[in-house]
Amino acid sequence: MELLLSSRRNLTLDALKALAIFLVVLTHIFQRTIPNYGSTDCWWAQIIYLLCVPIFFFLSGISYSKKKELSPLAFIYDILKRGFLYFWPFLFFILLRIGIYNQWNNVSDAFDELMKYPVSGLWVCWILVFITIVLDIGLLISKLYPKLKKLFVSIMFIIGIVILLILRDKNIIDNDSFIGYNYFIIYTPLFLVGYLLGDNYFKIKKPIISIIISIISLTGLIVLCYYKRKFMSVHFYDDVWYNYLACLLSLGVYLGIVEIFKKLQKTQKIFAICGKYTLEIYFIHLIILKAFSELFYFSTSVTILVIIGLLLLCFVSTGIIILLTYYVPFLHFILFGKHFSRYDWEDKIWDAPKELVYDLVDEKTKQS
Image (cartoon, rainbow, N blue to C red):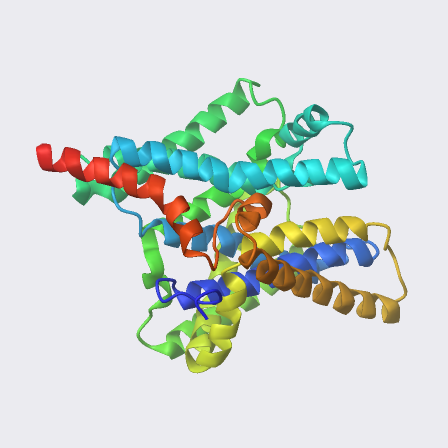
């Protein structure tokens, strides 16, 4: 059972991540099976999109709020770890798409395209690396004044955004898509909001208040999307305040969903199992949907069957791969940049660098 759930994880956050990744996969399937999906006629599609993407950055901010102040050695270790976590699987899946689907001629062409238009390949990796490096610097500084941790982290976050704005203004970032600039501007503030609020956001004492806020938020989201009739723009200069308002409304919807999870704890545990492996689901579903990229524009009856079939294929395939890699040393890391295994000796290998770094940190702390 340890493979599926961990007592150290927040089940509520994992359950919300599971719901969000389900909507992400559903959105990507809709894009490949429904004619004119991105048109103004599909206002309901914008609601689904808003309910899946913003919550991920908000939840990531909440998770990050649990991190302690970093020492210089811990900072270096953290950066290297994140390099493995995000860029190794990023490179692996680029090679996979070059080798199997001939999407690009070579790795150089792939990186050139992904720098200019990261949407075509795992743009989340770019954003998370940027955010965590900037915020880790804030944590490093806050080692001097632990009580001001959130202040230092927030200041570093704002400095990072300002740097991006200046680079765009000077045309060093030469278009809104370069290295995911547009996504940085729209989604990263949600990360900071999650960081500042923490999981207290989901701990309103009176459930009825959460449910009322959720209903009002969903109503506002429906009205906003219906009358705006414009698919969620990823460009900073296209109705940016509309985008921010829509994102905040989407976060409010999840307050009521959390109350449902609290009442249905078994359901929450099932969702939490899925939520623990959102990165794996994200990678695998992109590969599977790329394989079915020719499935466009079916009749309504066939489309429903295709949607259900692709959903099952994406999630079942991920489950099988997770179980298989659990029994093969280092394979899960090779595929996803994350580690878990049934072998104690493999755990010791992965834990050794971390223990060495933190032992050095403790030793220096004692000396000082």
